[in-house]
Amino acid sequence: MTGQVLRVLLVDDEPLALRRLGIALREFPDLDIVGTARDGDAAVDEA
Amino acid sequence: MPLPAIYIAGFWFVVGAINLVLLSLDAFRKGPFITDSLTSLCGCLLSFGLLWVTRHVARPRRPWRNMARWAAVVAAGTALWAFDSLMQAWTTGHPPWGRWPDDWFMPLRMNWVYFTALYALQMVILALVESIDALRTRERQLLEARLAALRFQLNPHFLFNTLNAISTLVAEASVREAGEMIERLSRFLRASLTGEPTDLVSLSAELDMIHAYLDIEAIRFGDRLNVRYACQAGLAEAQVPSFILQPLVENAVKYAVAPAKQAVTIAIEASAENESLILVVEDDGRHDHAMAVPGTGVGLRNVAARLDALYGPAARMEAVRRERGFTAVIRLPLQWSAT
Image (tube, rainbow over all chains, first blue to last red; front, side, top):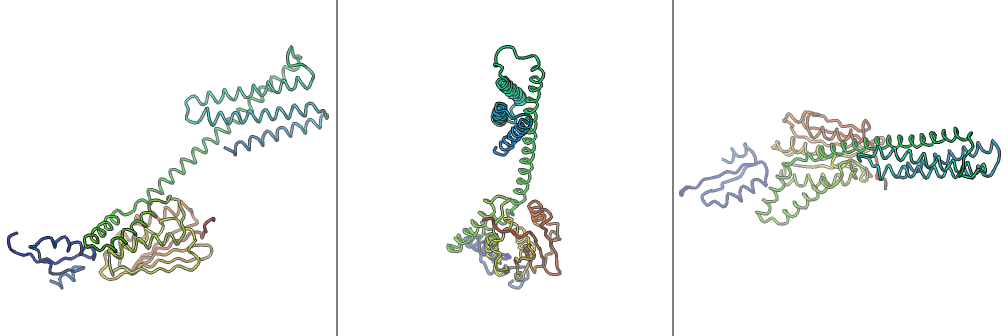
């Protein structure tokens, strides 16, 4: 990955899984977590 | 051990008593009374000896046990015959040595056959009891193994989900929540793994375990999972098979809560009706999954099989899929702890 920042939307139906994903992905400086959603519909709305 | 010994003592007591009654009808003489009682006592002691040999020397599964047992039978018969002959010689005034009258020959020989046959009969009965016991033990072990197998079909996904949740909480440094979660998991595993599969537990213990389980699932599913408990007063100490509600609650979580977007309520109810304990697990989820058809799920089958093994026709489970949601009803005899 060179310079470009990936924008990431996290989707999972379990709150803890979302939190876990968030923690794991925070390690990568070239990922930008822009939001979370608990199901497909909410994800589309967020996007 | 004690039961056959009691039967043996009882048998010889009755034999002795009958002999004494017959003697007193015949003619009242002191000598035969004493000798016949002594013969019965000797016969009883030899019976105990035979029992001991069967149990401790010629034990089941020893290769030469049959030979040894029949040798013991003949030895006991001969010993009692010799004792009885000496006693008869003594009461009739003939010394136990020297040549005995010729007309004693037949009764004495028949006595040997009679005594030996008696001990042979005892040995046959002992062997019969032994094989019945062995059969029962095997049946019980089979049943226990089956129950254990049924119960330990505990969903491994649940364990891994919980461990993942704990690891998330630790990663977030949510120390208190992580601690609570570990404590709940420990409570749940203790209830599921340490009890005997045939154990009965109090309804309150069973509900505590369900509580621990649902508390864990509540953290997984957040506000999508609501739980309502409705337990009729006075039933806390009623006895239920340990882990009987868990598969039903697990089904509700798996098929109603997990696929749902909206909040789902699981209701757990307990009530008593005419000497029956009625347990209900109900949800208002959608149950799109094929496994949710009543009677086809592994969890439901397990519950039905356990009820059948423990209570036979006295208990039953009904599972009804409703328009929206699922209801499982267990009826079992209302029992209280013996203490």
